[in-house]
Every structure is written in structure tokens, then in C-alpha cells.
Image 1 (cartoon, rainbow over the protein chains, first blue to last red):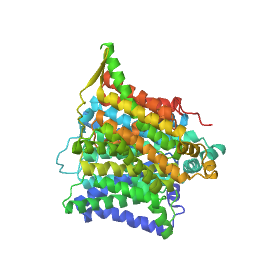
Image 2 (tube, rainbow over the protein chains, first blue to last red):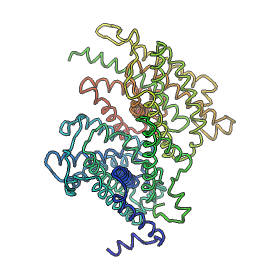
Image 3 (cartoon, each protein chain N blue to C red):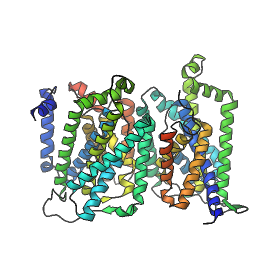
Image 4 (cartoon, each protein chain N blue to C red):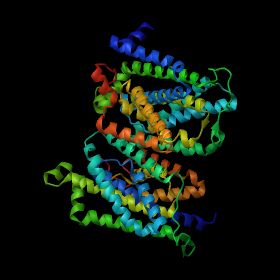
Length: 337
Length: 290
């Protein structure tokens, strides 16, 4: 355990630790300070920070651009929700089934792509194609109600049931907060370990990595399966938080895009980028929504246009993302960058 | 089911596939020369489709005739897009270009959504229910016109690249970037022209497609993906490959829609994509990279 803690904190300055501690404290007390609406916004932010962190393992660490991560979240959501509604299996047990399913799916996609040399843009298109395949497939899969959608029973809960994930937004908030911290710690451990250094080597120059004896196929497979398994938790959370699943929504390409926005805007390949990106993007988008509502405008696409413009501006002006730029100004070191 | 049902559906699929092919041709031309993967391709097509729908519902102008001005509008759009936004990105990493165009795609879809709302729109021409009979074959007139228009447009494009000086210059840029610079070609302008031409293809294809399918703002991503499936199947960068891929995918979708259910038809297109990526990644007519 002490080596664990040592590896987590090695090379982290006291000032950075203080900042992280303050952020953690603020996030823990947040639900007592703000109202339910803001708790819901914070849940969305943390959800995107979590999925962004998971996606980052593939693109940020290993350099494999996946644009179909919705498939892993979607599979996780459907597996856990189906087990719950059909057999009353608690979501944490459901997760034990969802993770291997998503990881296996990631392994299949990874195997096909890496074994047959599908790289770069072709790889991105392959991942989209698989997600679309799943979307249309689930639209016709009757055991999960096909296009009609899968619903979880909703009732007024007197108390929070953490085991069955039924309860108030505040409970969900702490669940996703814990998960986001866990993902952050996991990524930190991964990226400062042997496997992480191999990933970075592959990202920077795959030929050279192979030349120095790294089994690039194997390490890319690790990246895609770990990323998929982590992402599947987000799906389970999504299912139990929103209580309804439609293939048209959960497997939609816009879900995949939303997952990548946080890290891209915050900084691909950094540990803190996905969190910062999710925070900046979601709070700006929510402000925009409130402003539009206040003006009495109902524009269903406005939020997405805003996302598009943000992505455009960041890709054009700050291709490394906001976080590396900020971190440099404040003299903070991010392990992965 | 009797055999002529299959034959009818197959012919319809091939004709639709020709329009798909023209759309994919635009993507292929852009990639072949500029080396940028236009991830907003289907979204650009949906712009053209809405132009056609608006021109039809407001002035009763036939999309088959409006195809030419719409292609011209998209040409300008593509030209400006390449010279203004994408050109600084041609030396950036692949994923950076990709994300730029993803951003553009998101913006186009949702601006269309804001302007036109989510409802499907159709173009009901006077000949919408006509058909041609040829022995046992009964073919929709709209599909015949659209397919024929696609062939004409593609032929003009082939001729342009083959026989004109600008076409030759563009091919030179695609073959050897540095060489093109050395002999004094204005590569940036030729890139913008190429992007414009690719956009014009998809513009013309979009106008034709309004005769065949309903238009909603959300169809953009579907067609982007379809265009990718087609060009990868046919061979990215190969012009005949794009047409062939279009016909193949059109045919597959039509038969899959008949044998299974129409809503599952694109699963088969993705199935073909996966098979091609695995066993012939350069595409049916593509050249194997040296």
C-alpha cells in the first residue's frame, strides 16, 4: 500500500497536492452548498470527466483514435439494466458482467484492427462502424425491447439504496465522484508504470517502439480492453441514473463525440485535461442553455452548435488543449504530458 | 418470392447506388488530392438536400434541374472552407484534421436543426409515382433520372480530370506535392478547387437524393458514414472505385432491406466495410501502398 501511495504522489509538488486537496474538498461539500439542479449539472460534468478519462487511455496514452466509445458505455448500460429488470440483479453485480462484455467487445475491435493493420483514420471509422452496428442491432433486439427502449422501474425512494443504486441525485453524485477519482488514480498509476511508458512509446512512434522490442500489438490490446472496461461503468451509471435506455441515444455517434470533447478541449493525453475540459464545456453549455431559456428561446440544437464551435476553436487555436497551456502558466507538472 | 421481385429491387438498388457513388466520389477526390478526410461530407450533402427542398417547396423548381446551381453553391462553400479553414490544417496530425471536420459536422447538423426543425421533408415531383416498364422490370422513374444524372455528372468529372489543364494540374498535386510546388503550381488554390469540386459532387448527389429519400437534419452523419463505407470498399482515392463501391453498397442495402428489414439494411453495409478493411484494406480497386 505504501508503494502505491508513493507511486501516486511521487514527483508531485506540495503545491499541486494542495490544489488537488482543495478541489477534492470542494467537490465533497458541493451537494450541501448548491441546489439539486447544480448537483445534476455536476453529475453530468463528472460523468463526462470519467468517460473522457477512459477514452484518454486509448487516444491520449496510446494514440489510437476511437470515435465509437458509445458502444462500450452502451453495452455496459444494457447488460446491467437487463440483468436488473429481468432478474433483479443489483447493479454492482451487473457491473461484474458488464465490464467483461465491454472488454471483450473492445478486444474484438482491437484484435481486428491491430492484427490487420487498420490504423489512423481507418481505425476511427472502424470504431464508428462498430458503434453504428450496435445501435442498429439493439434497435432490433427484442430481449431488450428493441427501439421501444428499456426502462428501469422508477419510484419515490424514502431512503437511498446504494446497493441497488436507487435514490436521490446526491447519492448518484457521490457515486460518480468516487468513480471519477478512481479513474483518475487508475490512469495516474497506469501512466507512471511500465505499461504506461510502453503506451507513450507506441503513441510517439510505433515503429520505433517495436524496434526496441515492445510487443505493440499486446500493449494496444491492453489499452483498448482497459479503456472499454472502464467506460462500461459509465454506461451502468447512465442506465441507473436516467432509468431509460434507447439504442438511438446510447449508441448514437453524438454520445461518442461527447465523450471525447472533454479530453480534446482539456488536453489529450493529460490526466487533468479530461476533468477540466468536462468542467469548462458543461458549465459553459449550461449557462448558454439558461441564458436561452431566460430569453424565451427554445432552440434544440443550440447546445450542440455551441459544442461544435468550442471544438473548432480549441482545435484551431489551442491544439494541445486548455490544460497544458494553463499548467505551464502555473508551473504544474502533469505526469502524462 | 418470385425472381422478378428481386430483380426489380436490385435494379432500384443499383440506381440508388449510382447516386451514392457520386456522393462518395466527392469524398474520394478530396482525400485523393488534399489528403484530408472530409468528416463533414454527409452534412454537406444535407445542406444541398435542404437547398433542393426549399427551392422546390418555395418555387416548384425541379431538383434535377436545380442540381446544377446547387452544385455551384456547394462548390463555393467547399472552396471557401478549404482556403479559409482547412488549409492551415493540412500539415497538422491526422486526428487534428479529423476533429476539425467533426466540429464542422456538428455545427452543420444543428444549425440545420435550428432552422428547419426535426421533421422529415419530401419533394413530391409530378413524376414521383411514374415508372418505366421493361419486360418484367418495373423501375421508378425518379431513380432512373437520378441514376442517369449521376452517371452524366461522374462522366463530366472524369473528363475534367483527364482532359483539362487544371484537371491535370490537380492530378499532379495528388501524385507529388513537392514536385507540383517545384514546377510552380499554386497548390493551395488547386487544393481549394479540389475541395470545391468534391463539394459540388456531393451537392449534385444531394439534390438527386431528395427524389429518393426524405430529408431531415439528422441524416448527415448517416451519409458521412455511408460515404466512408463506399470509398473504403471501392478504394480510397480511386474514382472508378467510388462509383463501383456505391453500386455495391446500394445493391446490398436494397437486397438486405428486402430479405430482412429495411431499418437493418445499413448493418450489411457495415459488415461489408469490416470485411474489406480486414481482407483488402486498400479497397476493391485501390492500389496497395508501396
